[in-house]
Image (cartoon, rainbow, N blue to C red; front, side):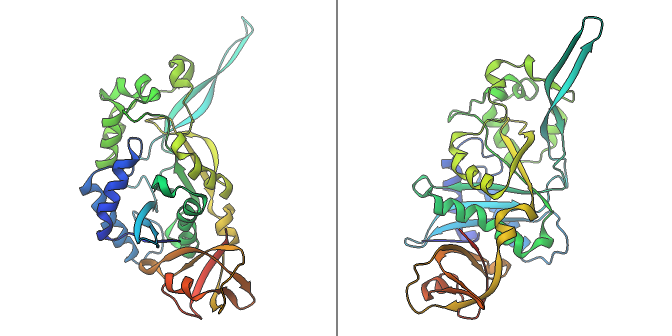
Length: 337
């Protein structure tokens, strides 16, 4: 079985291991001990802060295999990006070039540097050990963030987005970066990705080209990967698409990976989640599986278990209650898996 809870400082070695194994392209989860420790500190500080509207808070959670008590995954959320520096993306659009005299009318695809997502909440850093990349674990970890958002809507914006990993190999080669970014940053993709994860983003604003990039002028290898998802992110992306996230024409400025977005009220988990009391079921349940959460902020917990909805609440067995550190009558939140 699995359990999701907020990160703690004792989880640092596990986070380091996952960041190293994730490889290049996970910009917001660098294999850097100091930066990961800062992420833990920021998450704990955010959970201890009274919030009336979203600001610079961030939240990091871990996935635990309860049979071994090992951390096998992590995911995060940022309440609002682009507070200190703009959050840059490329918006894919068309430029019209026409000549009535020659009777030529061309629509040319172009990349426009923008910061349209500044001031928006972001999902990030979803990593799961390969041995645990099953439907149950991925769905629990990804959707647990949405249950947290539904419980604390004042901490997030109504618009939510997630940047997905684009095409690159284990050696740090990115066709898109090689064709565009390296000419302005004078460094390889691996170094730029790492610097973006461990330092402030001022260097992006200083070095990125300001004018539209006409897609046909890029090498074919770069054009082919614009908006293309890294194969290792396909399973977790399926969960997001089923939730209601959609591609709106934005891509990452480094590897051209796609960005998905949604209105929070339109997401399946948020619109269908229910709240009520935990009811004790004395016998082993064989009903449908549910995502079940309990606890407030620092004590937030989410698991998957068989349960039976009832008028007064949700019937769950005692083992599930123990896993969530609750008892019969505790207030819980649930949604069908």
